Amino acid sequence: MENKKKCTLREAQLVMLEILKDVHKVCEENNIKYFIIDGTLLGAVRHKGFIPWDDDLDIGMLRKDYEKFLKVAPKKLKSDLFLQTVKSDKNYTLYHIPAKVRKNNTLFVEFGEEHPKYHSGIYIDVFPYDDVCNSKTKEFIRQDILTFLLKCKYEVNGKDIKAKVRRTLNVLTKPLSYEALYEFAMNTVRWTENSTKGIINYGGELIWNKKFNKEDILPLNKIEFEGMEFYGPNNPHKVLENIYGDYMKLPPEDERTWHAKDIYVIEK
Image (cartoon, rainbow, N blue to C red):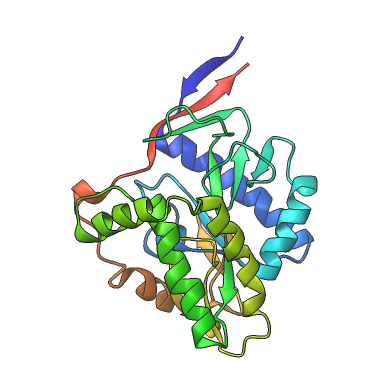
């Protein structure tokens, strides 16, 4: 018989930290470069750990390291962890987050995803990053048109004009499935090979478009997070300014929200 024990946010954060520690170990032992990014990097710089109201953990990898991690991780991660992709979990449909490392025997219930068929344990997100194409035309197709179409398939809620436009285009492009767009995005990865731009962006299969100077990412440096050291970008302040602007300013209290509706540990 299984019993579900509800977790506090802090308990869930500590589970994510344990996942990160094992991912760090696997990456170190297999010469895979990763870096904490987005809200996790912000937490490291501003809070020396998790943002107090944050309920996810984000790491990034350049494409070659990401592909290597996908091959190595299933064999090297602890047995209570699961590398989730559209290939390892046939029910997984969150194409815009192509890889997660999940903790078995836990349950992370997100708003709008109360009864998913896919593995929904506590997790950390793993994002690929690609070089910007030498060709301006290819980069425009890849990171402007394609990213926008992917957003139309995913981000259709909201009342602002952008959401209304996305809803309209989602209807007009209904014959073009998210899966087809995802496959096309993966086929464009080769366009980024041998790039000399010195600029990287979120992977083409993601729904975000943000360019970073490669010198702000590499070489990676150790950064303190929850009393331990993990890898972060070479210039975290430039990266955070690029993402958030005035990143040291706390958001209003009513904007300090999190993704989870409920978080559980399953006791057998």
